[in-house]
Image (cartoon, rainbow, N blue to C red; front, side, top):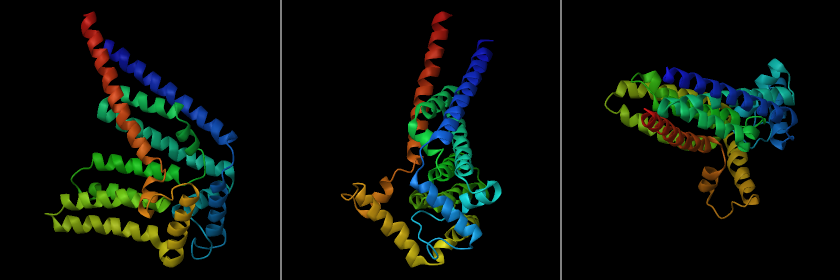
Length: 286
């Protein structure tokens, strides 16, 4: 009976915290200050879908190619507006937070899910990031799903390829995800080293997705390298990252995913402590 009551109370708390998070996000969505990246993504999406142009080759764009196609597609369906773009970002953010809660609960129990939601509810970066037209909402969501796919992968080729494929598309929004993509691909390759056919099939799936994601960059490699690498490196120097080498600048650019993974790990530890405290209290009462 006590277990049922505690489970019901936990579910109620999860629902209430999630509702608070949604309300906060809606307030940020409707009243948040305009960010320069939002206009860039909206305009790039219109150029892609309405003028048939490609980023890098036909117009300058300093982010990965995923943003113009994602927000451009949203604009074609719901209208190219600030509200529609932010709503699409919020949808990705809610999916990301839901996935993080599920991951924390799967690892360390229901209390960990509560801690994750608490982090999201009081965390300004999450509230701001998930209500802006930027690359982070989609890339962090895809990277979170890739983390789940990697941690709970089955033995089939499709399941093993899921995490690298998701990271491929996360890299299409933020190229910095190429680093975890390489690490995960090497890990999967080592797992499948004794099964050449499965290894070839997995990397064929990942390679095909990578080719599709990179097509806008392959249309003009020199311009894409200039806008994504050189321009971003110059931006890093203006923001005070000039003391780091180029590779370190890209690794330390804030992309949100590492923060979310850290939050889950912290939530799992805090959730385990809370669960243990409840067990000890139950034993003492008895």
